[in-house]
Amino acid sequence: MALTSAYLVAVKNLPFFLEALRTARSPERFTFKFVEDLGFKSTNDRLFIPLLKALGFVDENGVPKQRYFDFLDDNRWQHILADGMQEAYEDLFRLNKKAHTLSRTDLAGKIRSLTQGKYSDVVINNMTKTFAELAKLANFERPRVESHAPTDGPAATKDNKQTGDVSPAAIDLPQDSHEHLAVDRRISHNRGIDGLTYRIEIVLPAHRDKAVYDAIFRSLKEHLL
Image 1 (cartoon, rainbow, N blue to C red):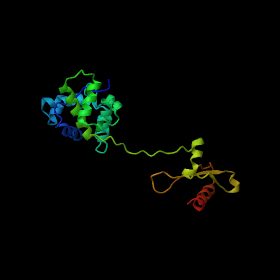
Image 2 (tube, rainbow, N blue to C red):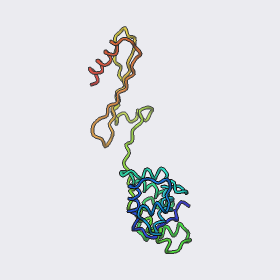
Image 3 (tube, rainbow, N blue to C red):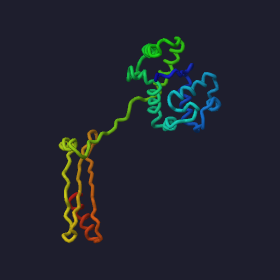
């Protein structure tokens, strides 16, 4: 079952503990002593370690995993925490993809259902408040990713009217060069971004005559720039 049974008895120190992790030097292994060295000396604070394991921050031996190192990034830590939650509470998010927005009452009901009544009310309450506190700190809103239309094949042809593609053009070289320069002038307009993006591909011929290359760039300057 992809629903962790790890929980905290007291959640008041959770935000301070996560902040301490991001400012402290990474340990070789997470141990009770390391947690105490961070300033969390209560026996309840020892429960942070199994929670970190559930979130995929450390392995079963307490050795930091890549997710933990990603978590140290001040610009991404909230998204990394959300990733860990979605893994640790996968069954809960399967029931409701916005489980992090549910009320405590609804959360408790779903957790009780998923665990098939195996846990006492006290444990269900601890699991619920742990999830809710983590959800307050995490960021589930993903940055928008630009999508780019394919440049080859039927799909590209279909979208040409939207992207403003221009068919390839040929630039003539001196007659004695017997070479041809293909220039792909593809102009694409990305929705949501102001202005146009010009993509120019130049295939230069193998030629020892410097005059050939001078002619190429002179023609580029005259016709494209």
